[in-house]
Image (cartoon, rainbow, N blue to C red):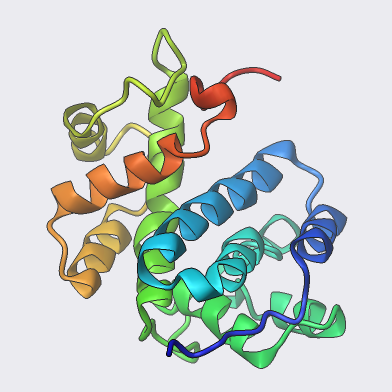
Length: 201
């Protein structure tokens, strides 16, 4: 039996908390994207805890918009906000692992869930940036070859930390190509209209 993980917040409560502290639609969409990716992987690796994985993804950057000028404190400000809303210690712990490289006081990823969050969070941003540049604005026709080109071009989406993505793949024991393919598949699984990812509303 898999360990049962409890977030302490429903998906709806978590989304409301995200929107309370984030006004930029891009930040909200990023949380929803990482939520979708985490749910996709949960269905493969830990289906009984899909809801927990999803809430972790949704709230992983809760405090970024309000405190982006202090990257070393990222998720530290989020912890009391999550706790005040009813979030559990394990929820806070899981979220804080994805920025351990910026703050050595934070826990490092240990579980499969934490390793996937660490590996995929930056990668979803790179994929999203690449997709909206395509004529189709569709992730459904996006592939690993195209992603590898963007990954190697350090000028493209320069804010995306390629070293974190490499480290995440290593943590998981996956080749970069496998991480790329799996994350693209994850994002394709919930693309709006099953057709486009970067489609304008």
